Amino acid sequence: MPDSKRRAQPDPDAENTAAAERPGPETDAERRRRRAMFLRELTEARELRARVQPRRARAARMRQQMRMRTFRW
Image 1 (cartoon, one colour):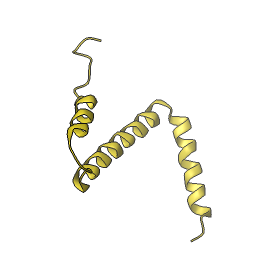
Image 2 (cartoon, helix red, strand yellow):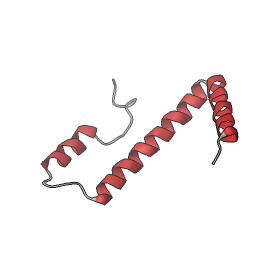
Image 3 (tube, helix red, strand yellow):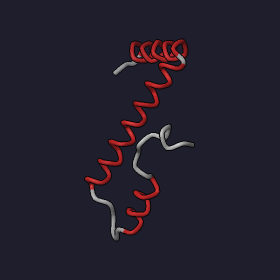
Image 4 (tube, one colour):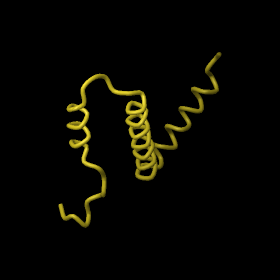
């Protein structure tokens, strides 16, 4: 793949090797940072899917709304 079409993202292998070299358990800040990155990517993937498959995404939103309406506290 040409470099011009490749997205500029950090190398995931570099982060994994850096985490493997660190002794001891991960800190809360590292865990929160990884979780925030995961949630950003998950949101981005959902938005992309909604743009690519609008009918399916609309049906999924409707199902979610029905679940929320019928949910009892």
